[in-house]
Amino acid sequence: MSSYSSYGTRSQNRGFTIDGFMDTLKCNYTPSVVAYIRSVYTLMGISLFFVGLGSYVAVKAMFMAGSLMGGLLSFLCVLGIVIMPATKENLKTRVGLLFATSFFMGHGMWPLIMDAIMVDPAIVITCLLGTSVVFIAFSLAALTARPGSYLYLGHSILYILTIMSITVLTQLLIGLPGRWVFTIYPYISLGVSCAFVLYDTQMIAAKAMLGSRDIVMDAALLVIDFVEIFRFLLKIMTNNKKSEKKRDE
Image 1 (spheres, helix red, strand yellow):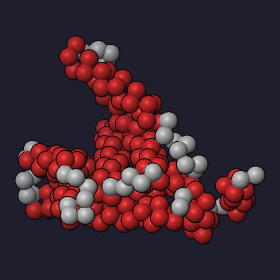
Image 2 (image 1 turned 180 degrees about the vertical axis):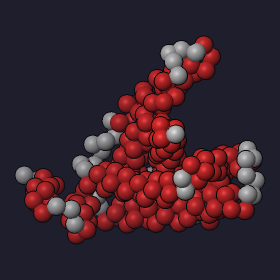
Image 3 (image 1 turned 135 degrees about the vertical axis):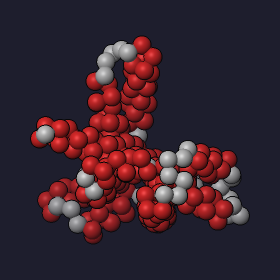
């Protein structure tokens, strides 16, 4: 029996522990890959601070609130990260672009956050906690599973996104298949976002094992996954709370 299999049996018997998680990482990946993954998540955590800062500035200071400029700047910053070569000389610039991207991503969620606050301010905190739990759970699942076991999700995710895009487009253009599309869309999108966490996490680790390491791009992918989960979860909970209030009236 392989070391991974034997560890898997022991971990099932004793449940999840931090030491057990680290042992699994050491069984699955080399020390350099483990250190790289730790660095990616550290940079992601700092970037999430800027996401929160962007949302706070939009909500409290009303800076460019309701403007499309934030979304445009976020897109340009991401484009800069993609185009700029991942070299040591460009590292500080690309990290700065990542922080700017995160700030404007948070700023761009102003309409959703304000809508949720108008319905029930507690929804925002609940969604933030829920997103954190979901993201951590799926990240742990990806890192403790057999390396590469979730990479097959890439094809399935692309297929689902294609079908959903076509369905939404036909509904907007010709009114088919029905308004129910917009009801289920946030739920399917939430599931896809969770699947992206599994896929992106294992893809980052797989590329690192092959020597392809771009800490800024990898952290950006995880930030986008986190924000997308939060965004769709916030949309779902806000809509459900609105429906609940209508029933009570």
